[in-house]
Image (cartoon, rainbow, N blue to C red; front, side, top):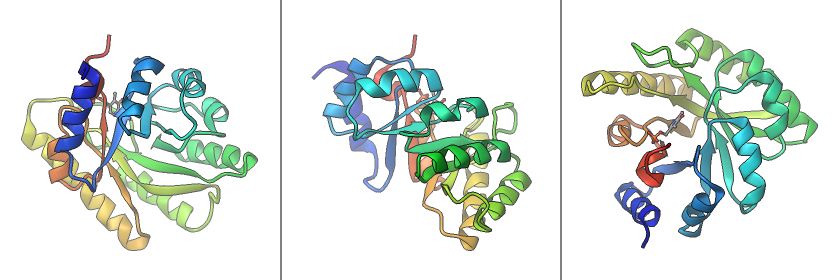
Length: 217
Ligand SMILES: *Cc1c(COP(=O)(O)O)cnc(C)c1O
């Protein structure tokens, strides 16, 4: 087996079967993505619209593409006809735009609300209050062509495990709170460096790039 196949199998076999693996393929070639696809992986994520739009046509149609990077409203139109899930919804304006373009294609696009959980970093995401308000508006029917599946968060990039754990638990609490109003199914947190901790804190979906594909150039 080659390097990527080995890495993928290692990650996959260590992952509990009820945890969704989102393979983060940003910066990696369609060839490499294909190798992982051939091992059975169907969910891949990119963080840039342009890269996603370039690679998707080169790969099998049954891939579920997720977008995980900040999305500018003027770029939604390029991915609205094929993207499976947009994990990085960080404003009402963006959700409105996704709803509009999903409607044009007579689709319902799945989304996650991205919440700012990092105490120190300025990583994007909404504050709790904004997240709750947007969720409520969606529940009231304001965005019929999007389906909020759950929440996404990125912990601070730090060696301080206690801090990362606090941040993950914070998002899990919000997820549980919102779930009381409407059942949610996706709590996306954890990357190559911190996914076992994220799972221990309640994540059911992890976004793993370098642990599968190796370091990005
Ligand atoms: C790049 C990226 C990942 C994957 O990071 P790795 O450390 O390579 O696993 C996960 N989530 C987001 C939002 C990313 O941008």
